Amino acid sequence: MSTCSGCQKPFPAGSRITEFDGKQYHPDCFACADCHKPITSQFYPFNSQYLCSACHEARFPRKRCGKCGSLITSAGITFAGASYHAACFLCVTCKQPISAQSKISMVDGQPCCVKCYEDKHAKRCSRCQKAIVADVEYLEFEDKYWHKECFTCSKCQKCIAEESFYQDGNLILCKDCI
Image (tube, rainbow, N blue to C red):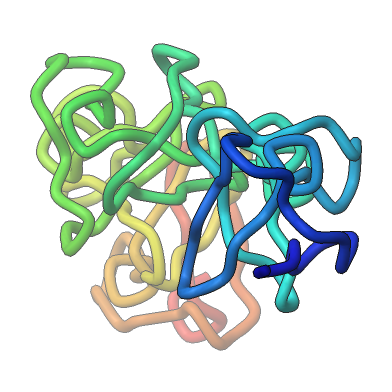
């Protein structure tokens, strides 16, 4: 007479037997290691025992999408501490998907594609009017911004980003031009 792999007691004649991985159990003995309820549907092997779906989710929570809130069951994108389905990871401005390999900026805590950031949100250089993007050195003076190489003397055009300068009205002058 065979015995249950859970309680080691024999199976009465004609009783139901749950079998998994070559082992046999009384239906009540094939139980979740955490909540001890009999497993009757989906389960997960865990340290030579088994977890029911609810206990597995409690122990190993899956990530939820920061946009739609549903579970992420395949590859997702993590940005600023939140996880997203690839289809839910959209630019806050143009609403188009942003690839995980793209450079991403943040606008009001939301992801923004590079094109929209540069076109609509980035600071503008007071000299060349081009966007000042992330990882580019820039200077700020009296609520105006310059790329480091664009911060030049108003008279001689010498770069003064690393030098002392003087202001004369709207002019910014190097020490040689004052």
